[in-house]
Length: 458
Image (cartoon, rainbow, N blue to C red; front, side, top):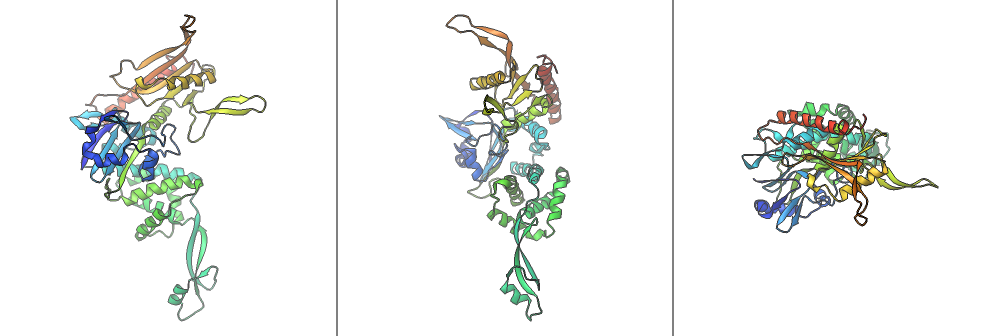
């Protein structure tokens, strides 16, 4: 197996990826929309949850003699080639192919409540780690789908009695009712919870039970699992291949059950790869990708969400409006600031940016200034992940007034935007437990910088 490691938001010389040219050709300059159509698993779904992850974003983009990576992190495979995209805060251990990505692990743990699945024993291959990521995501997708209720659809049932209500099954009738004793074999179309979709979920539940960590995983979705088990009384272990084939050939297409379609895809990946091989088949690309920008924003929400509103773009939740027409109050200019402080007397706008401090510029400035003007906020923050190589993790900027034409430009003392970095430990000798402890200390410092140092009055 040929494996190459790169990091997000970096430029990589093309020669670095020469040894995995087949895999590179499969993903190069392709959008996430295109890769998802080829059955690559993207989290969160690009049309559903992610505020920052666009379907037009590319995993690898060709730029002159280099390949540029984006905010995406994860694992990809094709045939016997693997590409691992780690966070730019991963720590080199000995050589470039031995890196501890504690930061990525920490984000998964905090945001998705996932165990430390990317740092298993070295005997675990990358493909096995991907497989475990699929399993650990199962409770999240199951709970989300079942918010719509149990999936219910029409199914065909076979009967053999004297109370005929459907289509007579002549072949079966001849087989089982000769000589005739009064019963008739027939089929009837019924609305039922015991259908192919719920059977697929049931088989996934039963499979997860066989894993060493199965009880821990299913405990996170116990109520939902119990409902699925109760609604599938015809479950049979030996029907698994038939159920999988049925679901592969009949994907859920109704828009209302979009969450069930995502769950269906995940269940098939889990059951298809019991003996998981990341590059299974010569023409099959496999893997899982995570949106680093989405993970970072949701992680920041965990830290400051008590004191801030957090509108969600793709979900259309808590949208704000820039303008309204006074006569009919028609709202114009829908916006979704990342964070709006709940303190209306000293309003703050905060924007989570998963990018280096030097890349926060231009449109980023205009966006936050527009939000500040809209909500009469005099303080704004860009919250980004920082490392010790950056000269200053906290940089204050004062809004100017006046013009160069009149030679009267000066800054305003009361309108401030701060680039505020959360320091990511970069000591390669740390264990994951020690890394987590340092992160907690840095989190406390970041929250203090927003709440106390800026005197926001909480």
